[in-house]
Length: 186
Image (cartoon, rainbow, N blue to C red; front, side, top):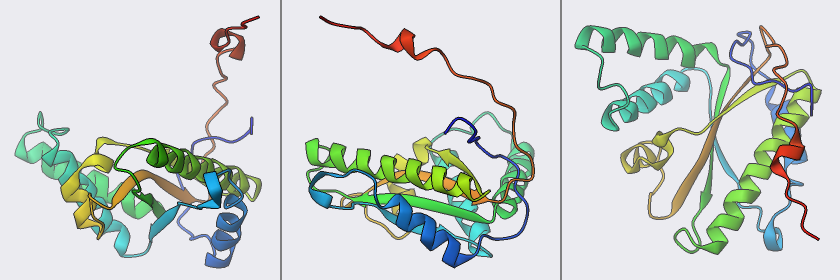
């Protein structure tokens, strides 16, 4: 757990599908209420990475995240984003089916999907595979949700996780002492 790092720079080779399936199977032992196993994934690789990246950038534009860019700078930003999306071997969109439109059951399922993702990240790291967990406003963009073939009424997007073999591993930046987050009550 302490050695895992968020990876920003990946080698070009893909992770074997059987290895990914094995790691996802390990991750499936995440705690989840009534063993619902609410996690679902769409895995973008090969040529699909560019199209997925384009949908992400279109969402950024729709949401006003790139509104300060001129047309010229926006074109350059699109090229830069495309290079990034093509440089990562796998982009996994994690999502879940909604049960009670943002109520307690959906909160439980969201937490279970997050536990699944963390389990996956740790299992992957143990195999020398890096990840980067991202959660941007795009995950709430109803047009984007539709663009990836899901329904904003039926589905909730949880995260996008980039996956691949690390080209460079960042240094440990440490963590705040956990004591600062604890209030003991007697």
